Image (cartoon, rainbow, N blue to C red; front, top):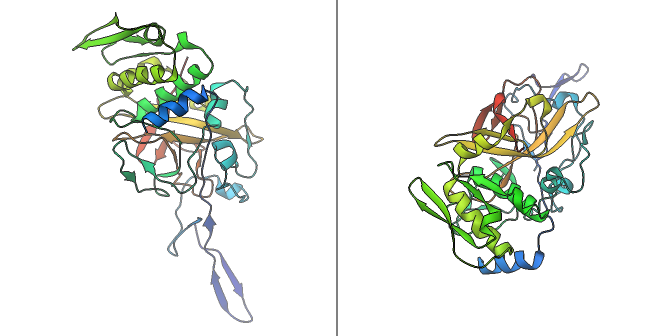
Length: 319
C-alpha cells in the first residue's frame, strides 16, 4: 500500500498522509437473579496510528469502507460500545436468543485491564484486547479459554430457566448434568471413575449454579468441548459460534456480535479468555485496525487473532 502523495507543481511540495484508525470496545449482562448474583459477587469478593514507515498491508475491507466512529467509550455493553463500520448493519436477533445475550454482555469501563484470578493484571490492552467483560472469575485458576465459553453458554441457559439443558462433558467422558446437581447431588472424581452421589438438599440458587460451573471448569477443557460442538461452514457464521482447537494446549474463542453488508458479507467481534485464568476480553483486530475490533474473513485462508491462529474449518456451534 503506497503512501498517498499530493504534488502541487507550482510549489513542488510533497505531503505524506498518515492514516489513523479507531480502536474499539464492548459491554452488558442479562437477567439472572440479580440479588443472588450481587450476593455471590460480594462473597467472592486511540486512536491507533500507523507508523510513518510503510503502512501494514493485508487483505482487509477498510479500503471499501468509509471511516465511522466505531468506538463509544462511555457505553457499557458490546452493542452500544461498538458501532459496525460504514455499510454494515447488525443482524437482527430474537430478544431471548443466545446471540442477544452475548451482544448485551456487560463490560468494565473502557480502559480497565483484564484481571487474572490471582489479582494481577494483563497489561496488553490495545495490543491483545480492547474491552473487558464485567465478570467475577473467582480466585482459582479455572476460567481459561473453553471455561469462559462454557460459562457464557451456561449463564444464558440459567437466565432462561432452561436448567435441564445445562450439561457439559468432562475430558473423561462423564456427563455433568446441572439438573442432577441442583437436586442436591455432587460429583466424586477418582481418576477416570466419576459419579454423582447424594450430598445435600435441592438448591437452584445462583451460588449453587456457580459451584457447579467450578467443577465443570476443573474437569472439562477444549478437548471435551470440541467434541460437544457441531461443525459449521464459516460462510454461515453466527453469533455464539466458536473457533476451537482441542488440545493441551488448545484454544477457543467465541463470536459475540455480527453484522452484514448489502452483499451479505459478514463481519464479527470475538471474545476469549486465556491462560492463566483471566476475565473474558474483546479481541482487537491487529490485521485491519480500521475496523477493529470487528473481523472479516473475506479473502482470508485462516483467522489470525492476537494470541492464536485458527484454520477456518475449526468453526463449531452449540446444538
